Structures are given as structure tokens and as C-alpha cells.
Image (cartoon, rainbow, N blue to C red; front, side):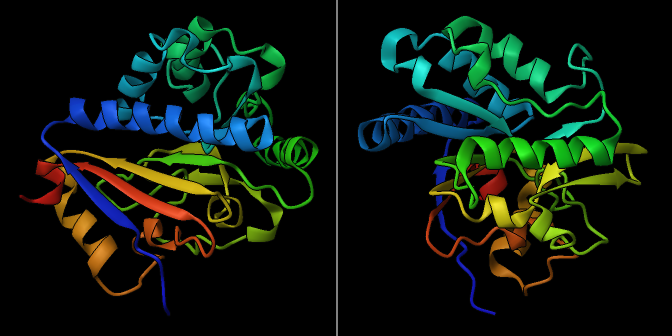
Length: 240
């Protein structure tokens, strides 16, 4: 199978990766607003995205925040005020600071029954972005096991792909989650992975350079046909 493994950009430190991620967000937002008068982005959880969000909180009038639409790549099945909630992390780190209208923030309802929440978020995507949802930017992380969003090793990441959003039970974390499927992720105009740390170096190499084994390394399934794929990584993760 031919796949787009994208371009890898290597930075000195995790802080440098976070800065590059924030800069990319602003750049792609400006492009989208100039071209389509709106910018749609799917946020990721994790340490490096959080640091990028905290930088965005200081961006002030760098963007017309009223034209930014916020979606989420995945969510733990917890209430929005829970400390494990990706929504809460993003809200506290930057959404509350930049004045994005509440009506432009499309959170996954982690407090609802998981399958119902997944169906509801599918309807949200279709209502906001049309019959073939195409996000301007998808932000992703990658776990040491090769998972991304809530697509975990041991099952086909393309399961329920046509549903756009699905409920997933993580055996390793004994927790239900909601996740966008590869159909949505791979349709984005730009996809960016932020990866840092020596603990992810071997997996990163396997995902980008090894054989195509998406049930083992779900991150490999993120291979856009008509979009840009970038990997922002620190030297430790790059193994240099």
C-alpha cells in the first residue's frame, strides 16, 4: 500500500515543538480565513498540545477568533469539568482566554452514553461542515504504543470508518472514549503530529519507516490523499 508518511521537522526541545505547533495553528488559520472566511480545527490532548494552547492564549488579536471553529479529535468519557477531559484542558489552557464564541466550540459529550455521544458528534460534524466534513487542521499526538486520537493497537482503526465518529473501549486504560475515525482525520487539509521524548523514538521510526501494520501502530492509518501531513518532533523522539 502506498502511503503518505509526510514531512518530519525536528526541533531541539519539547518547548520548541510547542512553539512550532502554535505558529502552525496561527498560519493555517490565517490562510483558511483569508480563503474561506472560517477556520476549522480539531484539537488534541496531551502535554505538547497543552503547551501550544497556552502560547495561543497569549496570541491576542493575531486571529479573528470569531471565525475559528473548534472540534476535538477524541475525548474520554468523563464530564467536561473532569480533570481528564480534553475539553477542559483546552478550555482552561486557551479557549477561555481568546474569546471564541461558545457556539463555535463543538465538544464531544463525554458525559453521555458513549455510542450515543459518538452518533451525536457525527451529526455535529455533518451539521457544521457538510456531508463530507473536511477540517482545515487536525492536531494529533502519538502514544508510545503508536495510538493516535483514540485509535488503539489491537483493533482495526478503520472499524466503523463510515460512521465518522465511534465509541472505543480502551482495555489498557479501562475507559470508554469517543474518537474521530480515519475518514475524518485523513480528509483534513493539514494534519500535524506533535511527538516528543525518547520513549517514543522507536515507535516513531516504526510508524514512519516500518512495514504498514495499522492494527499494531494505528498512527500509520493517518495518510492523507489530498492533504498535508507534518510531524513536529524533538531531537529525542527523532533519535538524533
